[in-house]
Image (cartoon, rainbow over all chains, first blue to last red; front, side):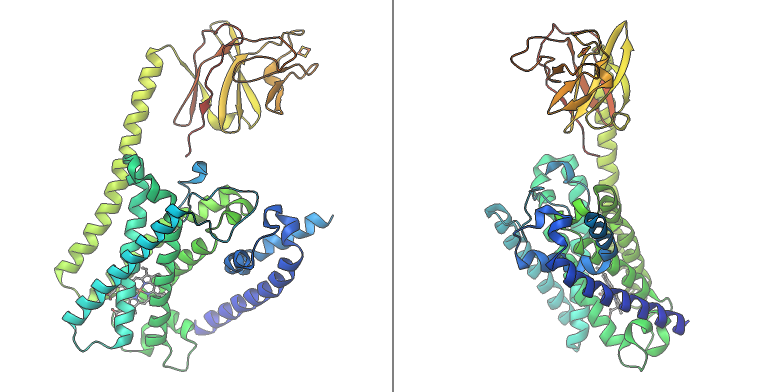
Length: 69
Length: 362
Ligand code: HEM
Ligand code: FES
C-alpha cells in the first residue's frame, strides 16, 4: 500500500514538474496564440493561472500543437 | 456575464472580456472584498478566542489547525447557501456575482489547515508526510479509528482545482461544460468534509452540541437548496399554465435548436420558424418573400435570418429586411419557460417587433 501511494505521488510530482517546464515555454510563446484574450495581460494574470496550468497543461499542449498547423 | 453567474461557487460577475485582467476590481468589488476579509478575520478571531477559553493550554499549531478548519468550513456553508438564496430573493444577487473571491479565500484558509495538519500529525515519522495521510493512523497518536484525513485531503484537492480555475480564462479554455462539471463537484467536496468532521474531530470532541451544530449547518444548506428548487418548480408550473391559457403551444426544448439556426413547426396551419441566436429566441413565418424559400433551413448571418435559397435577409426580432430592402414577414410571440420553448401561433402583422425571449440560464 505504502509503495503504491509513494509511486503514485512520484508520478504526480513528475507530471507537475513537466507541467512547470511546459508552462514556462508556453507562457512566453504559445499562450497568446491559443487565446487572443491573453495579449497584453500582466504578469499577475499569468501568475494567477499558473497553478491551473500545472494541472491542465496537456490540454494547452494540444491546443498549441493544433494552432501550429 | 450574467449568463455564467450561477455556474459554480467560484464564478463571479467578471465580464467575458476580450482581454483578461488579473482580477477585475471595481469599487463595488473592492468594498465587497474589504467586508469579506473583515468577516473572515472576525470568524477566525471568534474561533481562536473560543478555543483558548475551552483549552487554555492549547498549542499554537493546534490553535491554527482548528481555527482555520472551522473558519473555512463556515465559509463553505455560506458559499453554498448564496446560490439558493439568490434564487429565492434577488437582493442576494450581488453576493452571487462576487462569490469567486469568497471561494478562493476559503480555499486558502482550508489549505493552511491541511498543511498544518500534515506537518503536525504526519511529518514526524520517516514516511513521506503525504503518504502518511493515506497509510493512516499508525504513525501518530490516533485521534480516530477512521482515516478521516483522506476525506479532507480529497476535498482539498477539489477546492484547489476550483480555485485554480476560477478565472474566466478557464471558463473559456476548458469549455463551459467541463468547467461547470468541475465546479459542481463542490457538493462532493462538501459531503467529504461533513464526513471528515463527523468521523474525525467529532469522535473525540463528541459533545452533543457539536453534533447539533454540524447537523444544523447541513440542514440549512440542503433545506435552502430544496426550498429554492421547489420555488422554481412552482414558478415554472404557474408560468406554464398561464401560457397554456393564453394560447401558447409548447414546441421543443431550448437545446433542440442549434445556435444561429431554427426549428420549424406547423401549428394550426401556420408554418413557423423559431430561431435561436445570442441567447435570444424569435419566431417568424417560415416562408421567404422572394420565392417562398424555407427560411427555417437558413442560418443567422450578421444578425439576420438568411434564406438558404437566394440569400434574402430578415431581422429575427421584427421580420423586416434590412434597409434598403422592404420585405417583411409575420412574426410570432415566443416564450422560454424553464428549458422549453413556447410559441403563440397567431401571426402578428408583417414587420411587427416582438421582444425576443431570453434563454434562461440553467
Ligand atoms: C490535507 C487535507 C486535510 C487534513 C490532513 C486534515 C486533517 C485534520 C485533522 C487532523 C483534524 C483534527 C484536528 C484537531 O481537532 O486537532 C481536522 C479537523 C477538521 N478539519 Fe481537516 N484536514 C484536511 C482538510 C480539510 C479541509 C479542506 C477542510 C475544509 C474546510 C477541513 C475542515 C476541518 C474541520 C471543520 C475540522 C474540525 C475542526 C476542529 O477540530 O475543531 N479539513 N482535519
Ligand atoms: S426564396 Fe428566399 S431568397 Fe429566394
